[in-house]
Image 1 (cartoon, rainbow, N blue to C red):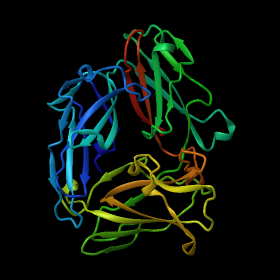
Image 2 (image 1 turned 180 degrees about the vertical axis):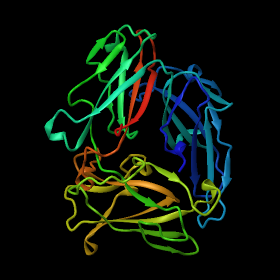
Image 3 (image 1 turned 60 degrees about the horizontal axis):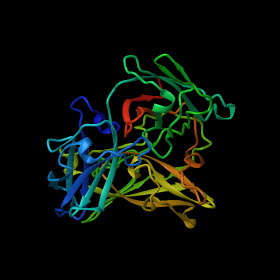
Length: 381
């Protein structure tokens, strides 16, 4: 499995790092797609910089790298974009929003993606620990950390520095803009009690769609017709009350791959995939969703389960490209917007998660947030 595909969208301003965006158009024709970049502050609000200040090259460019699928039942056009490139390079660190749009109309958005550009000026030391609040000891993970900046002057760290911590790259649950608890020389200490604390979750569930010739471990049934492959995943069960069991996962991500062809991008087919969750009683005052990087870590209508009383459970039909997927079940109460995986998946302190710490800096008089430090680490040290 390609480790680069499992990385997070963070590149360095000072070296040749590149990000690659790929997407498919199931209309299988050629469209006029263009893209631009928007510089944002730490809170993802558009910064005060003009595009001339953070882009070296053209402000808007066309996506000209595309190819047609082959050896597939479902036809599509596959588009590819590298950033930075010879026509558009980046001159400032910080948060960026990549916008892809159609027919030269920036209001006609096709997709957006967040990424970060870091200019490494600081280092981050961290410690994973049991939560200090007793009710969370078995279910949550707490992180203490310190930011060291020898050789880089920060005059007023409590006003000029912002930190963001994320679990598994999720911005929807990120902890943002916390001031250092202590400042000791060139070290900023974030040793709070019950501040940087996350539900630990369980290891993600797995479905392997890499083969259309035989059933993989969790595929109950494989069918096809002239137009489509169909895969039925074995029925899942709730595990919120089950003890922790380590199973290697990829922390909610997915990788596009197939096991029988040489080109993962162009020869991987699309599969109608059926998920089911056994549950004798439907949830009241809320809805159930498939959740993970395959849903952009968002709650989307197309991933909402339907309860089927005759089947004693929930069911969902989803179109997925061949690959290896992590997923989870998330419940959203009618009066909430944040997904909650605890009712189905449960939380267990021993679960392996990735964490990211991002350090932003804006000195007095500056007009944007620089990203001066970024680190990713595992909860299993």
